[in-house]
Amino acid sequence: MELLLQIAAIAALVAICVLVVFAVVSLVSLTKLLKETDVSMKSISSDFSQLKESTIIMLGELSKTNEKVVESLDNLNGAIKDIRFSANQIERRTDSLFNILEPFGDLFKYAYKKIAPPVSQTALYFSAASKAISAFTTIISTKKKS
Image (cartoon, rainbow, N blue to C red; front, top):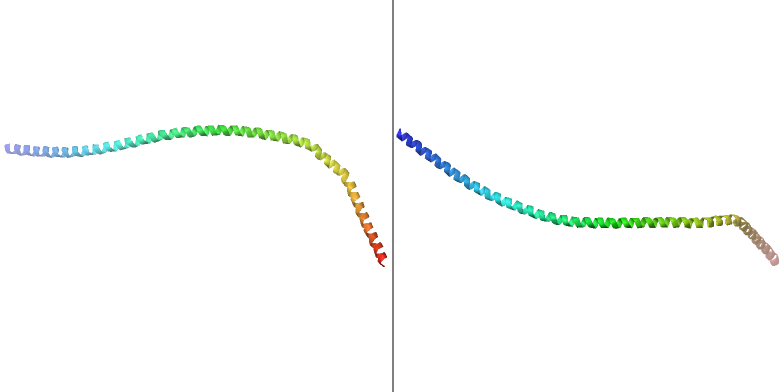
């Protein structure tokens, strides 16, 4: 029985030794895993720091761009107001110019209606007289030759 107890004790010690070796190997693997995790976390932290700095710079530039856009839009708004004012001025002056010139147009139409028929009639008379004189001179010149 004593031998059996000694074998059981030796088996227990061997089992404990195997467990200790397994625990040491597991702890070494765990240590290696923790070191890799630490390196990965430092890399991620560094990347986020760079991302933060880049984001801050981009936000600053975006803010400046936004200010320039707002300023440009204000300038554009002022230019649009000036253009609208100028267009209104041109419209008013054009209307007044048309109002001034419209009676002259009516006068010219009236004068044309009154003057055109007699001038046309006179031109017809001159044309007829010219043809008559031409015919008369042709007849006289043919009689002189014969």
